[in-house]
Image (cartoon, rainbow over all chains, first blue to last red; front, side, top):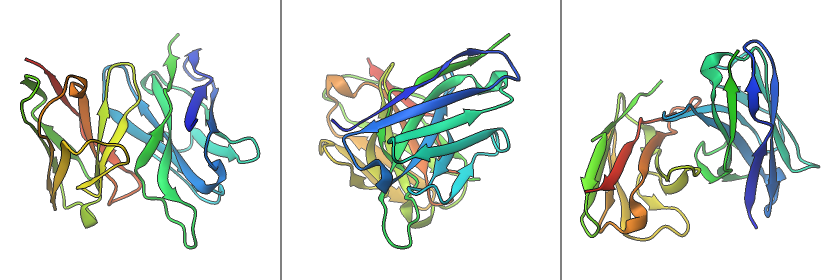
Length: 126
Length: 109
């Protein structure tokens, strides 16, 4: 079954850290770029970060740059998001999402998402 | 950064009716790199349309996308009960960052 399953969310105090994981199954994880997208309660979608299929490139939204780090372990079929210096405005459901483009020569992601996980809720509150 | 505006904010229709959702960009979206997603309460978004008009795998043909430049439309030809949801457009022609519209809620009249 093709799926993504996020974990690691919870309640954390401002300024603290949290690491999210996203376990992939049912497809060749190492062939796809991956993204994190978040959604604040009752709000719309916000792209957070992307990582190339082989981990060679990463990009971040300005709102998280310098605080969040995206990474992956292709041997474990797992995507990560390390979140440091958390703020109240980081409160959201965090989704991992697969880029539609499969790895190929001259890879660039398509930057849209054909498979999503169910999300994990991060609440930043004192 | 390209800002997307969606209208209307809420669309109240009955099953069987036609739904027309609009997405407008603050500047031209290159190569019609625009996608549409459907999201139901408590669920992850689902890709419906990419490249402004191409349906994703498994998406019924009652969903269609059109437009170019700064104006795009998602049309649902005949609403089924399962189509009542929130719909987001997303541009990916100027990335990073990709940006999403604020969403249009289609609810039952």
